Image (tube, rainbow, N blue to C red; front, side, top):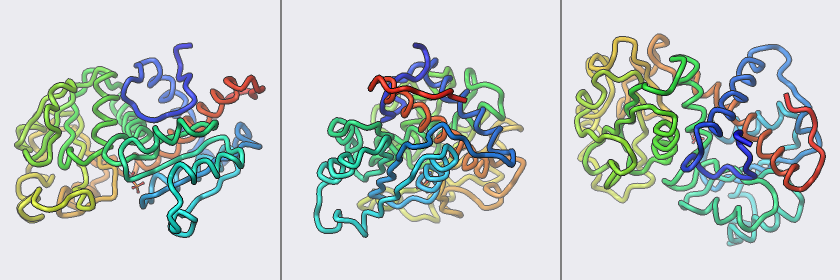
Amino acid sequence: MSGYAHRHLLGTRGLTAAEITDLLDRANRYAEINRTPDKKHAILSGRTVVNLFYENSTRTRTSFELAAKRLSADVINMQTGASSVAKGETLIDTAATLNAMHPDVLVVRHHDSGAVSLLSQKVNCAVVNAGDGKHEHPTQGLLDALTIRRRKGRLAGLKVAICGDVLHSRVARSNIYLLTTMGAEVRLVAPRTLCIPGAESLGVSVFHDLKAGIADCDIVMMLRIQNERMSGGFIPSTREYFRFFGLDREKLAAAKPDALVMHPGPMNRGVEIDSDIADDVDRSLIREQVEMGVAVRMAVLETVTRNLALERGEPWGNAK
Ligand code: CP
């Protein structure tokens, strides 16, 4: 099978172009249906999706919930602060407890890189990584790719600059793996203190000057400064950072005249991006990224649930 045939989605690293295209094509169909009055499908009726989030989230958690509900699944949202996690229960014990209730999909966000992969080895349902530490955020990579593909018509050959706090960003890593696999030219633009050591080995070029890095680019993807993952000393001050690495209209002029701006959110306005650019409907794709997030998560939930059913030898209905 050339499409996505795995039970879990833990990252974009190692995915083939055919697997990525399969997920994007399915998500694109959902994106169109989501713009119609009748958004509900029966494909996951009787299935159960559990959202287990150990870190805060607005976009990812709500869009996974909405995606599961649009596919008619039953959805449980675990608030770890109000669960036995707060009494010291480990990730693996929590996963084993939930697994005993026969969910079909566990959607997991965790602050430790690799935690979601470890958990996936301890359960017999499907597991989707909703962001683990600074490792990967595969559905963000997919929704970014879908947003770009819909607006530019392709991914291959595009010049994409990923700018800002690359070091702490799982979004950057998932986008690097996915976009290079799909034939895009990826540049990382970051202060020396916030870049991935040896990033060139990932097939990207590295710049430490924003205007030089985004010159002639089709897509300028800004990243949030992740203060919660820093122990101090990475940037002199937010004011200084904005002066050199914050995207404003004057710096954006170095990119192609029709270059589009992205940001995974949440934004630090006036730190990595000026509101003037973030809110410019002609240049900013930020709201469209959120919209595509629901479509991508519908495609992923449907696909991993189907793959789980086929692995178990269970019947699978007519996929839309
Ligand atoms: N982009 C993203 O992961 O946003 P949330 O943290 O709000 O889910």
